Length: 193
Image (cartoon, rainbow, N blue to C red; front, top):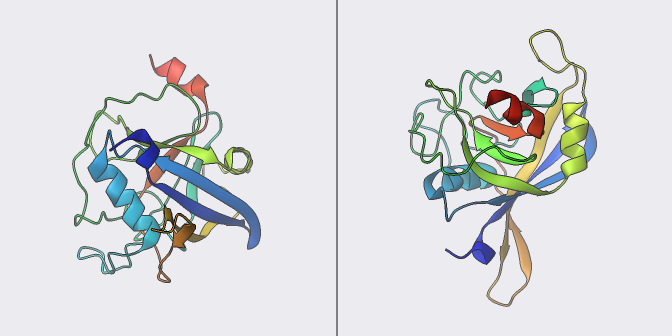
C-alpha cells in the first residue's frame, strides 16, 4: 500500500463534558497492517461486540485514563477503564506485530501491550490536533497519573474518499474498546536509550 493510501481516523474529545476538539491520525498500514486494522475497526465500531468482554468493540465512550507529562497519554480501555482491560478485533489480545518503527519523535500512535519488554508497536501518528494532545497532556493528575478531568472520546471514526472523490466519514453509533498510547514528547524516548 502506498503512503498516499494510508487510512486516517479521528477522535472527537470532550473534557469534563465540554467539546475540546478533534485528533486525526494517519495509520502506517504499509508497516503494521494488523495493528492498524485493529485500531481502524475500533474507531468505526464495525466489528460489533467482543467475544471476550461482551462489550462493543469501539473507542467511543472511553476515556484517557493515564497521563504522564512529557511521555504519553493513554486511553481506550472499555472493560476496566484503567489500562488493564480491553479487547482487540481478533479476540482478546494479539501479539506485537513489528518494532520496525521507533519512538523517535512526538505525536506517534502506539498500541499498549501486556508482555515484557514493554516496547510498544508504533503504527501511526497525529496529523491534526497536536495542540489538543498537548492540552490533554497538561491536565492535572494524581500520583498514579490518573487525570482529575474526565477526558472522553465522544465520537470516533474513519475518513475515506468515495468513488466520486469526496471525503466521507465512517462512524458506528455504539460504544468503545482496547488500549493505546499517544507519545507526546521526544524527551522520554531519549532517556530510554
